Image 1 (cartoon, rainbow, N blue to C red):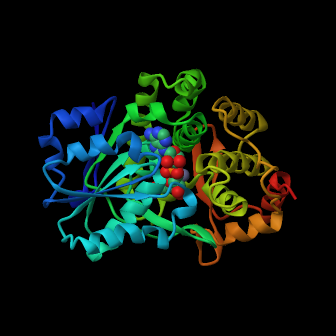
Image 2 (cartoon, rainbow, N blue to C red):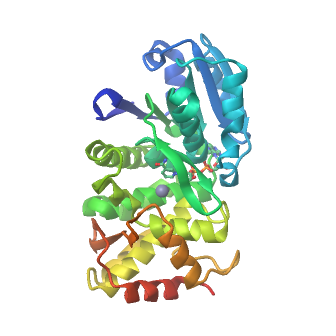
Length: 367
Ligand SMILES: NC(=O)c1ccc[n+]([C@@H]2O[C@H](COP(=O)([O-])OP(=O)(O)OC[C@H]3O[C@@H](n4cnc5c(N)ncnc54)[C@H](O)[C@@H]3O)[C@@H](O)[C@H]2O)c1
Ligand SMILES: [Zn+2]
């Protein structure tokens, strides 16, 4: 088991990463008790994950007063109304301020459970048990919680840090190939942000990751979490440098919203968004087209898209532009983007050429 720490003073917490960790915790139940305040637990999962891992998770908390809430599966349910079943369960059972919510699932369950924990009685504890690669390398760490609004992704939310994160790589065995690739998009993001040697490691090990080699997965998860933990520790509430983690996301969120939540997976949209960020960076002369090609090559090796799929719905420049302008990264009307100035080096800027952005959107739009 690898243990990393997210350093946030009194809100610090560990991330446990390893194969078969659920069993390990089950055999050492005292370990989990360090992260629980009271006697009450609510496990939140969804209808796909519950049949696979709920029984084991219930056993882990068998010495507590424990309820479970099973949500429908899908990004379309990550809404304000979607969290009501969690709140209703907490209210109906009169759970107190010491209750701990447990998010058993991917990023959707994690974001919704975390948000419910943030607002129930003005904030109760929660534990993340991420079961997708995307959740293990990204969404379960850092305390961003929330739900979507029809007009924008993740627009309703709160910063609320978990008590601990338990990333059992064994759960990735039941994940389908497309979801695994979606998670790899966020792993590639860390390499592009600040680590050229990790980028080269990914080029050499993409086959192993795609084939779910346990060591390769553990290394990629550890690297990603370490990186995210350091960035979050330096800027918990995204006052500045944490926004670097949004590489590919301003474009990606616009794509996700335009295509309709759930039609394009989050990581797929981020992959296309990173290619768009590279395209815009080339137009400014910040990277050359060889570097862009290397980025595209790695993304393709991960079986991820590099263009907006044209089958689902046509997306126009105006629509992308409007959605990007509504993104959270707009401050005082100024759009900030994460762009790339070398392989393994990204930066946040609002000083880019609007005409060049228009050209990038023109190149990638499908209408
Ligand atoms: N909070 C953050 O910092 C942050 C960061 C990145 C992404 N996100 C959010 O995360 C969400 C995407 O998360 P995701 O990619 O994990 O999607 P997801 O939660 O929808 O999970 C993907 C699919 O895999 C299924 N699944 C999950 N674990 C499984 C397993 N072990 N075996 C089989 N099936 C399994 C799920 O039921 C779902 O159908 C988006 O809503 C995104 O906005 C949040
Ligand atoms: Zn993301």
